[in-house]
Image (cartoon, rainbow, N blue to C red; front, side):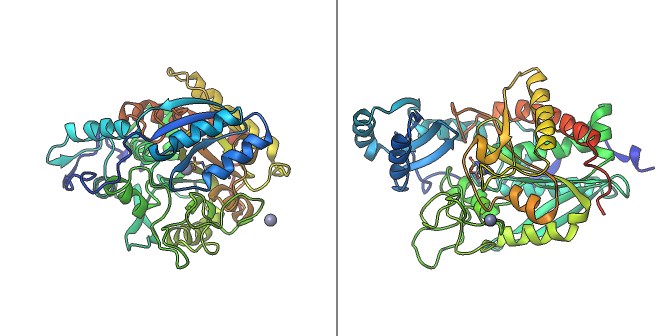
Length: 428
Ligand code: 0X9
Ligand code: ZN
Ligand code: ZN
């Protein structure tokens, strides 16, 4: 019985902290502002879409049916104000200086630096520290854990994952995290979750850990993640150059070969934040991930993709709002269990749920649609973590543990409901 081999406590990784990052050469967001916009008609929608084409000065942070959050550079704020007045668009400033959020985060991260790294989830860590911690986890639990790699990034970094398996024959759950570079809360939550599966003594967490095989990739977009730490905190895409443009990178969550570039769910403009890439799987990170998942698809029953922000749980489809997936009712029932469990946690955080295209917007070529459509994984969800826009992607690290705790409760309920609906039986 391997059951009793887990140790209790925090995994201490003894690696020297990598040189601190994000300083002089990093892009600054002085006086960049984030506005919440309430869209009342199609004309207003069109105007906002037009503005976003100017990707140098306008960056989409969030979008749902009627509400859009846009970060705007100080150079065009006056122009923006004139336009919204002219067209009667309702706006509200939700961040008055993005750089001050980033400065606060840098302070939070620096204060606690010492010589060795122990992930304690009170701050955000650079990739080298996460990798070091993961090495230590794998060394500490050699019988339960196993490294897997999903190939190499464009810049040549190995993309690491951890498989946690207490016994043979378990159904599998795959977690993809930090596919979008700036969504730091995702890898912070994924690493906390790994630690919890290995060290928690709570009965329900032990049962979750020991009766399912977990495949977790804490940081998928490694190049982009390093870039957010060193050069541009708000970078989203990969870092592979585009031959036809001076703009760099593709949106990895539009690069999957499933309804790729359909229905306006992605952009063919290399400068756009949702650029689909020149062709499906053009990004090595996505090619590597999909090759890996294809190889184990018969063992994967559930796939979760961690994102931020918006507090929503999204099911397929992303590529079409009208078309609903065949097991829509089950997908919604399982989603409701997740959302109720999150709301029932002491923080009482409110999530919404629904299909991706229905709740947010059409997005084609995404992880969860590909896994659902092409890999026969019938429960796939995007989870958009905290918050609702007060801090957006620059979520203060005091949120890490609360976010992770409510996510764990959500996943416990999700797996329970999925089991009741018989989604965790052996597939083939
Ligand atoms: O746009 C995305 O890729 C996700 N939102 S984010 O702010 N994290 O970038 C949402 C993806 C939703 N999934 C689908 N629409 N399939
Ligand atoms: Zn299609
Ligand atoms: Zn995302």
